[in-house]
Length: 416
Image (cartoon, rainbow, N blue to C red; front, side, top):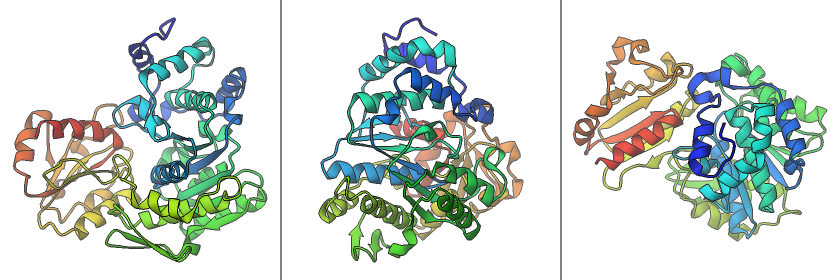
């Protein structure tokens, strides 16, 4: 570890020494809150100095976080937003008023915590968490939107006592850590529900709902369901029965109707502390440009998109949406982790005119050797990319899989 953090390069070098989940999986996780709690206590408990909304869920949590931030910012509040993973730069995880923090500010935060790093030996995500709590305290944010990493109960962010908890969805993901059935996964996610703190829930299976309901009852936490707003989606329009409006959005995927419904319910729950007018809510949603890496248009000329979909529920939504689009010839390019890829996911790629596979870096990355031959998936290598893409200029291409694939695809786009 550098003795002092004076430059962003010092931060980058230090981050490379930390266990990172994207590269090595569960070995990089620490399933205890004690280190983070003790570290924060020595820092003066900065996480207790700002109001927050805590968001967990298998899919949709990043989108709900971005929507909440955009809505409160539109209404005039100073917002903080914490999400992960980042797509290009570490700074993206930490946003004030919608903008990633500067290198200078990030270096200053690392310098502030540097004396404790050797004592507590935090993981990559734990360090991200203490950095963001320190930042939001310094910046005197009016409201912070905090996304969990994975799970909830033992997630480093779960030291918070928020004003509101949100659980967006429950499906199979990180089963080696969270459990192999939906009730186990729901139990972990429901760990963010705190005593008497309201909780919003999205579209969840019945067995998961029962677990969340039981946790909320034990914590005396009021429960609100997105289903109560009858969210629906048609040709990018999202309708809610309350406040009985139809919003013209930039979204492609129908699941975003649920994300918008959860956003509306959240602002309703907190309307006494943080009033938001219906006009500001509508404007925030209709002007929302989309979440980076979620069905993002990657090229100005060609219909090429990236959508991070790293589990069965996510990739099912992405593929269903792609197949509903008008372009006749559709191509899929996948880069995934081996603990996420499955026959169920791969079989959904059938029906695409071409299927390509790119091997990511790291111990967790899936390889073509593990993909059944009947799928006729073709390996692509960096040297082939320009030729491959030049052949696909008239095709709708969806790049999907791990969010860690995003920066690679972004680099490919710069060559075209």
